[in-house]
Image (cartoon, rainbow, N blue to C red; front, side, top):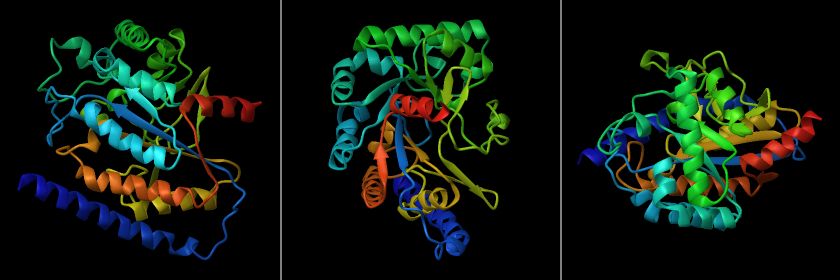
Length: 313
């Protein structure tokens, strides 16, 4: 009963936001789109243990054991690649699954929740900590150890990173560079997590990737209008909303359009805090189907890094 209510509430919220976005986009519908403008799709997936509807870890990994296969089957249908941002505990326990995904062309990046290092167990707790609130030395220890765990488990060193709960600061970027990382994808344009002790991205409206030193920052695609934020994310946005986001950037940007879709691996199973897994997979399938009708290429974060180096000259 609770799961049904939460699912219905999530759907109502998504539909309401989608209605206002459709109103905003009426003025664009009569305009022509440059069909030659290339679109690059990056799919980044935070890959971690299962959580319940209160965002609390429940100590299981059903989403790794079965959910990833469901997600991958949709990607295979549309010849899509993904970048899986993996926590150390997942790398330790499921290295064979990760190596298999890597061998078929997906990328394995690093994803850190500080509780992995500050608590004796991450089962049955809700993540509340931000990496950016730790000292540089503490961040260095966590990032170095996580990187070593993934490298030892999978046989290759990750070069892409996302901080748990998007907790990034300049010291994080410095430590990432020390450890050989090339890409970060923690910035959430127009979002402000400061009331919860996290970073404030409200002054970062830019959704276009940019270099910070040698690190390529690839913000998550979030469209902001009329005081509302619309994520390019199938678990919180309807297919119609995601189509509008795509078309907005196709209308507004000159040159390559770069879209960074994110979601969690555990959104592929039920229960989860966001949406029924069936609806999430349906939206994912629908939006990838739509993207096949336009000039789109799905690439990994590392492939985007190579592309941006060429563009930057």
